[in-house]
Amino acid sequence: MTRLTHLDASGAANMVDVSEKEVTSRAAIAEGEIVMQPGTLALIRQGDAKKGDVLGTARLAGIMAAKRTHELIPLCHPLAISKVAVDCTLDDNLPGVRVTAEVKVSGQTGVEMEALTAVSVACLTVYDMVKAADRTMRIDNVRLRMKSGGRSGTFEAP
Image (cartoon, rainbow, N blue to C red; front, side, top):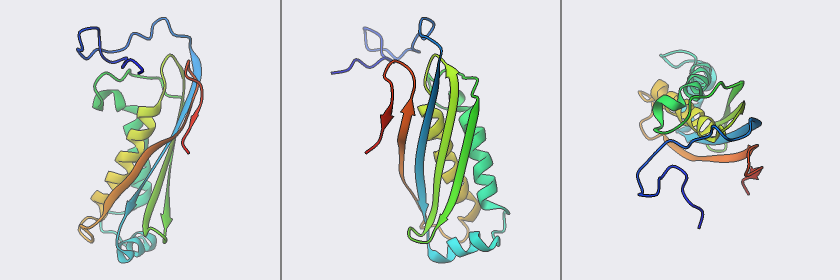
């Protein structure tokens, strides 16, 4: 079994020492979705949400969240992120919004948590902006789709 790097020999949580790791280009892509009533999706599509531009606000919230992940998730390293892109796409088949986040850095540790945080906060923002119209919404399938760089190389979700 792989040893958990955020635990020391006694099992106590600690921040991983990355000072000896090589600086490499690293990237991660995460995705998720928020499922809602068809009428709520129509409200977003028409731009009639009382709080304003739902997708634009969610995109911005996701970008901001990626940059602040180290303040939200204990033991995450603060990173000089070089790229965050958040895409929010309306999907009639859900019905709802699909969210994808891509994060890049040249550093000593990866950006998986930043990509996952961006997706999660973007979905939460959509929820917040239209919750008055639909309290049945649910956030689903938040997951890491791809990561590259570092010692463990590339991972792509099946």
